[in-house]
Length: 131
Image 1: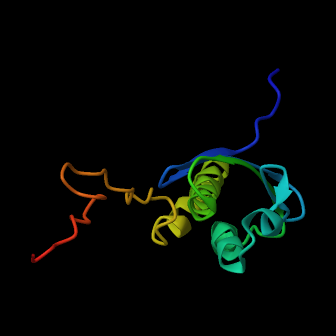
Image 2: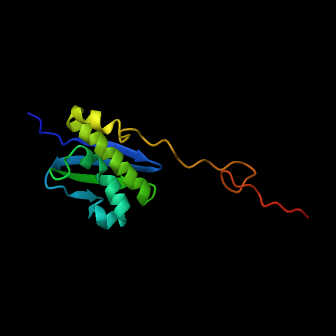
Image 3: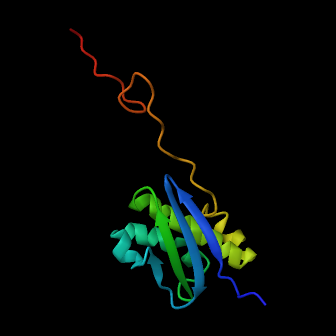
């Protein structure tokens, strides 16, 4: 008999990728081995990560373990949020009805635009000189 698997979700945002596992517990969120508040530093980002758990009312009953890589702190927080939402649906398909309309299951498609030829950045042109 195979060992029971933990609900899993892969989240993505900008250049960040997060692998997220859920397990029964007391509501502890661990990202890259650190507590979420310690890793993310900003209350706004911690609240963003907790959003799927609050919507499904599972904040106090599940522990979250996440490995985040790539991008910056804000992108990683968005990736963890996306991963938690997908893991909740992996755990119970009924949560799709709550998380879907909230937009938490949709991957945010906004990424950095590439640099274009003849420009300093993606959209920033050369400095204009009248003389």
